[in-house]
Image (cartoon, rainbow, N blue to C red; front, side, top):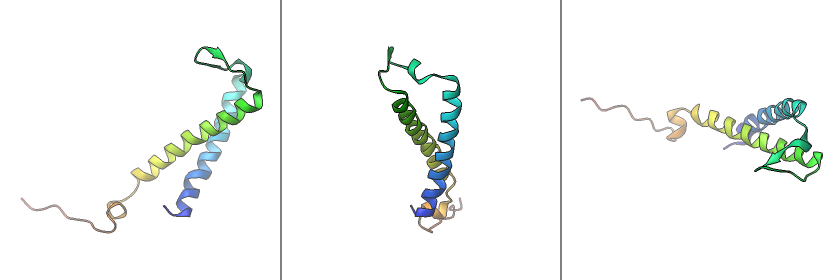
Length: 87
């Protein structure tokens, strides 16, 4: 995949992750976060950092799926497009 397409994927995903981080932690105190029933023993900064990268990863996956589903048949087949055979 070319570099320009990666930028189209990663930059909006970064912005979406930043917005999700702001929204989630406006309502949730990081020290009240529990994982599998037990409280996390991490600092606030560590929880903010891990959450941001998790949000960013999810956003990148969503953007990759959008780009993959938006590709044309000629992109997928290397320019070879077959026409349906008549019955």
